[in-house]
Amino acid sequence: MPSLRQIRYFLSVADLGGFTPAAAALHVAQPALSRQIGQLEEELGFALLRREPRGVSLTEAGALFRQRVGGLEEELRSAAEDARRLHRGEGGVLRLLHSSSTPLAGPLLAALQDFTRDQPRVRVDVDRLSSEQQQEAVAQGRADLGLARLPLLRQEGGIEIRPLPEERLWAALPAGHALAGASVLALGDLADECFVFAVHRERGGLARRVTDLCLARGFTPRLAPVTSRKTAMLNLVAAGFGIAVVPAAMASLATPGVHFVPLADADALARAALLLPPRPSALAAAFADALQLRWSA
Image (cartoon, rainbow, N blue to C red; front, side):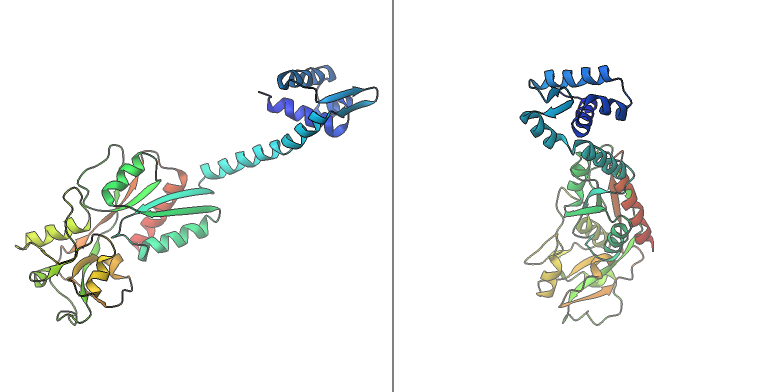
């Protein structure tokens, strides 16, 4: 495989038209330069240059080779600079995961705006995945960080779970519901209601947090005819299938036909967490800092 030095020497000879001026420009001895070009031609298996009494000219193959490798040095410099910026967190792609109950709204959306403003060369690839599955994706390198909803039933080895400040829980009610006019509710007020979400037996997250709170008050949430663990649960509330209990981030979503009422219970709180690999990239660390600032505001 030709070396970068050989290619640099060849391009200098081709550009300057001879070994003597190229050797002077490169600050190398002419015999050493000739030897490197000869080794390059031997490696390639064809002649690049015609040695003439007054300099050199390119063979047909040499002209094609020069055309193809002419921008190689600049590309290498550009690649090195791009990699350097990525190492410093100034460029590249950030792969971010979030759960349905940490929607692209509120502090997450604000953090994305802050981050992309401060890192104009960075592209953020956002995808939605359940909190439990996010851990596996981050651990396997398929994502740079995740924003999950606690509790997590299992923990992937090596993943850093960085809890964020707690959020108030709100009741999401159909607009015409009898309780929609209340300024505040207690979780016990919802004991006779049908809930449009159900606990997944292998996952934690919002549904499990709310169910645990209900069980602590002596009732099990009744299931509505149609349930969902996704943001789509708010569409089910609007359609009158039942109610939901959601964190402040979801209560900030403008959902036609849904009325949000805060829950007054002291423990009616939910918590999200950042999921980071053992050695997060500079971009992941920078975004985690930006999100923590917004979440704490």
